[in-house]
Picture 1 (cartoon, helix red, strand yellow):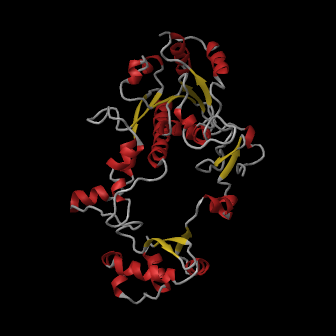
Picture 2 (picture 1 turned 180 degrees about the horizontal axis):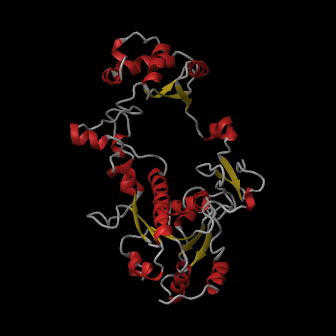
Length: 391
């Protein structure tokens, strides 16, 4: 469980080496964006208030540990400092950090940054190149801008939750921090787009990223289907209207497998395998969708009559898409996870490795999230040596 890199990689700066990020964000979405930048070499200084980021206390904490595994994952590769922004000294240190920063990440409610004296106008006046990534629940403006913004609310309002659940059952919510993780990726991407512009022109800007818009983006063609056809997708369990068969199926030995036939060629192979290759009801996407219930019954019964080893073997023999539904125990034993080194250990904490592989300048997990106040003294010393800029 180590980084997939050459022996000298540990000494090389990442592709974002030299980029300085100040993070004034808590919990997952904003700090997640900072994590992705830090994974690829950006210098990220996370600023916590005197009480610390609540993520330190969220979720599971190891024996004899103070901080949670969630904290150690989301805030890995960062320096951590504690500043009281209600004090003049704390604000002075923050201004010194921002003087040469490339990116500021914050996730306060709209207006809070301005109330602290660090609004975008003043930030850009002092540092015209800075990219200000603002992560909120609903965006910087609009009727809902001041409402509390949580992943659950975005999942409900984006249309996502309405799709989750069994036919005729209640809408469900994802059992992981899905919206926060999606928004973190959106935030990191958007910040780098803005930074590219700043590098070309010297012009910084505000980047408005929010949970609701991030989730709405993954609704695919559903907005178009409603706008042009009045189509409202019902809850279909694991199904998708335009992909049949598709879902999770229980084998004779109780093992669950997932099957997808999103491509016509794959669907034809599945139909041949289960004995429906000549059934014209299922010859096209439209036919399979129209006869969804009948086709799903055929596939479910075919799978249920066979042990998982046979089901997996036969699907792979015809090059159809299938996988065993894995839990964490399965994942840690899986050969592909091992071969791709998708799990890494940092400071004794096992966690996911970096999200994408770069052949020349790969990212790297250097350390887990640091203890509270760990880098405050070192960062204060650095900013004290930074030439002062005019306010």
